Image (tube, rainbow, N blue to C red):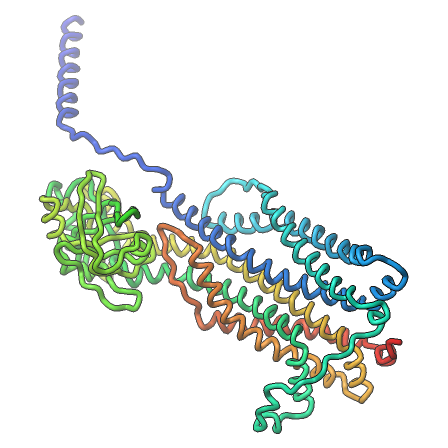
Length: 582
């Protein structure tokens, strides 16, 4: 037994010595500490959140402006409608402050109540809808609602200023008149010749009722401007909502079908010329149309006091890179690969650092290697930031050849990309494989989740458009009760009466939609400018179909309002409406 123990101990010691020798031969591993911002899921979710934040910083301002227009219109109309009652109260001895207080209480209570309801509903409904949209793509926990009381207070102050401020201005104007004058109706404004009358070729060929409509449109200037800017604001919101969707959804196609035209990229554990690459080359010979070695490294670009992180790309053979990368400007003008001492930067990177063609920039990596380069081109790019230089530039300024630890691959047409990817991943020395088709799907899913947010914006803009149109149309009919009653007494049929009234609405809707398209174009650019994400650039544009949708939806809302107000026209009592005010 002692001999057996001694033999087994000797064998065990030999195994330990062999193991120690193997450990001694192993290379010391490289250790990477990556923050959560390097995780693709976290980075994508952060980008999504930044987009929503950018939209939320701009859209409420425009919503407030349109809502303020509704408040101003409503309160102005209300005070003017009760002009006679104000005169009676003034004649009975009530002070101006007491009379004004009655209307201030109404407008103030409406503002407080509406703001309170809107604050609570908006704080719960909108976050839940947006969170639910993102849960389609991300695994998220339960949402925790946080009420922003500071934002609620700001909203309340703005609402009160809009409603009560308008009431004060209107009441003060009315209270300057004496009681006897207030108890009589306002004298109608004197008619004036309109522009169309100065164009005999058009005016003489217009039918009588169309001339009346044209006169009414331009005669009531306050209603004209409120209608045009109210409808224009709604069209602008719709156009901006559709434009955001257009600008976001196109970046996936632009990046992975037009710029990064390789099928997959591979990262190796060791530099290419220091590893056994026979397995990889065998798979490439069978499955790949072509491949090229690439040096990729995280680097910082500095110009003046501005600095930005990017990925530096150096192909082994610059003349072959056009098969894997399509470098071009935003106007599709091809960009030559940079020569010695030159660099091509992606558009957003250059914009953020203030670098232009001909400027000198500095690149520095984690090993403190520094490159002084001249910008020779600025290429179109939408996902991540890149800088491209030639291997000769690296050799000249660093003094050694780049260590190629990556490769771009184009797979043969008859081969399945994912099957080839799996085979490459099984090769010795391969650290990771990224298939561009998978990246395309990932970013498409990320952008698709934003569709729900954009649809929410479009829905809110449409609702606001409906409210503005309904409010202004109601005021229009109320102001012209006696006129409408008169034409009904004259024998106008139901459809003719509706056509007489709503023809003006349709013309004003058309003018408002035209103004809204101009406003929407600039609002869309302003919103997209405020959506600032480091890893993503947007293709800022509005598709022609979106313009058409915005115009059609505006007219659809106008048509719904006209249909709803038809009942009010039918309910006008001709005898009551035509009685003298006295």
